[in-house]
Amino acid sequence: MIRMKNIFTLLRLRDLHLIGVFLCLSIIVIPTTRVFLYPFTGNSLQPFLFYTLISLVEILFIVIFIIERKRKNYPLNHLPNSLWGAFFIWAVAAVFNLPEQINGTFVTLIFAIHFFFFVTLSSYLKCLPEAGRQLIASLILSILLFLPFFWLRLQATYDQQDFDWALNLPGYSNVRHLDYFLGSIITLLGLWPLTNRKQKTQKTFPYLIFSLLLALWIMLLWTGGRGAAIAAAAAIGTLLIFFRPTAWKQLLLLNFTALVLGASLSLLLPIPSGSYGLLRFASKIDTVQNFTAGRSGIWAEAINVWTQHLWFGVGAGQTKTIIKAAAQTFGHPHNIFIQTMLAWGIIGGIPFLAGIFGIFWIKGKEFYYAVEQSDMISFIAYGVALSIVVNALVDGTLYYPFPLFIFTIAVSITGIKRYKSII
Image 1 (cartoon, rainbow, N blue to C red):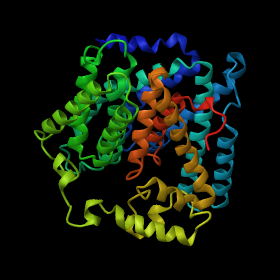
Image 2: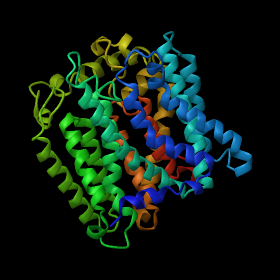
Image 3: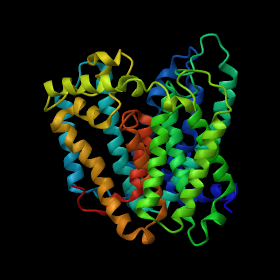
């Protein structure tokens, strides 16, 4: 059994270089830090830090990389030329149609920062590939640190008169954003036993990890996160059934048990809002519009607007101001394909999507033909990234900084840097 102390041992911070220590510690504390930044309490610095925290961490990582590059001999230009080309075309399209609103410029800049964070992180991992395990372990530690602080602050604030269960959760301006985080960690934990395949899965599946997995399923299904729950289950199921690593049937059964047990136990919790509860999965099915929680109307209007701006789109971050069905509330169309085409059109959108899905195609082929010879940390990271992408079909996981931060880390760990082309 893997004990708690073994998870901490996985970090081995002294082996990570300064840049790795900074990123691991950042991953661990970011979710908990967000708990103390939101909801806002009147401090003018809180909103700035809440909305820029991820970008600040990524920029600091890039700065440390630049300072340490020569001393640590990090490779600078190791990515496929096709990926650089895709980024350049996207950047031209994004700048060509940069929105007048400051929010659109801010969103565009954040996407560019994410890309250069990916460049530097994958460069670091090329120099020190074993750091991928520490980054994954840091994600596990982040949820362990986050949960007690989240529940303590929630306990202290939920009975306030103006408390909104959908929009006021500690650390999250929308309950669905919490679901993005929970779904990613559920996928990670569900695949974690693959890191020790020499023994039977039943023996190596850590009791702590299973307990945490169960707790997260209860929490996710209690919050009513349909997209995140389906994405996590689909990612775990697809990877185990399609690639069939050692003991995949036992691991699939354990995950199914955690899901069913979590769903059952979630029914015992009180439902504080219409946005919550397992029964939300089966509610509002009288019309397509209701079942999709208004998404179908947004999709139809966004596609119509895109066809009027076919080649370059309308610019990033414009859904609230342009799409009437968004009711000045939804910051994105809740679908990665529509989101991308609406923002950057065919010219910028196709390279953006090709860069993302090309990675999944190439790594998927590698795992399919040689999953038993693969590094399971990379395989688990692939699963985490896959769950985020599946969720992006109906949500904003590839729009908001925090899930994009996790996605970028996961993709970097998969090791796409080894390939000459991704398209």
